[in-house]
Amino acid sequence: MTKVWATLLLSALPLASLADLNIFACEPEWAALAEEIGHEHVDTNSATTAFADPHYIQARPSLIAKVRNADLVICSGAQLEIGWLPMLLQKANNRNVMPGTPGNMEASSYVLRLEATGNVDRSQGDIHPQGNPHVQTDPHNIAHIAVALGERMAKLDPENAAIYEAGLADFSARWTEAIANWEKRASELRGKRAITHHKSWVYLQHWLGITEVANLEPIPGLPPTATHLSRLLSQFKDGGADFIIHSTYQHEKPSDWLSERTGIPTIMLPLTVGGTDEATDLFALFDDIISRLLGATAL
Ligand SMILES: [Zn+2]
Image (cartoon, rainbow, N blue to C red; front, side):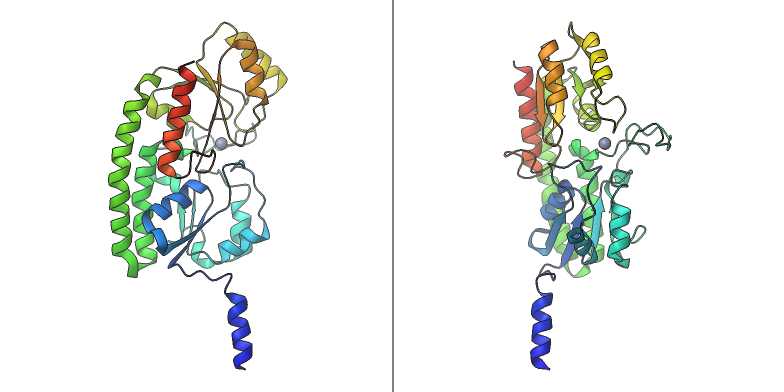
């Protein structure tokens, strides 16, 4: 009997976490934020990486197992993960993390969503029907979400509440200081005009005063077409934009095509932590985004 128990325990070990809170994040930025607040008390997993389009991933069995073991599921929401998260939650069948429970958190519901038109019709191909879900590109949004996440972690793991409160306070102080530095560094970006591949950067643009003049996608979620690109070429052949932005996971071909014909420089930006060698954590992510934008405007 003892031997059986020992075998059972051993086989269960790889799934069990030694941390106090098991956090399943849909995107790397929320895993990184939970680590900033909880340090060694949290064990985090991210469903997506900076090299995948968060709108579309496969609900793999390894992800189902992770949701099954999670105490908290945190996702951007606003339908960003509608193509895969509901199935993941259903298959994992973990009642502690179902929508509406304390173990389920939608990050974008703690900030003012931009482009919320109230049009919930996806039939035109628009994959942002509840407003833009890419809220992590404004650090002020992350500050608000950090407060909500810290409170949630304390509620789910009351024994460590004081630790999460202290972690949140420490993060918030460092984050506020970092935002002031980023805003100082980025002041010359105000008024610049951006063409972006997908509508991934509306919060960053809103924050830094950059104007979005066009997208390579004809509608959010529809890949760039030859017709749309030639339309953009005639629109921008004599200027009218300062840079073309694409993210790590997007093909650089459409950006390069337009850049070669218009002379407008392209910039590859990490949409989340891990998207470049430099973007190793949330602080480094914004350092890198601003450096890359300033580098392109200095050309
Ligand atoms: Zn999107």
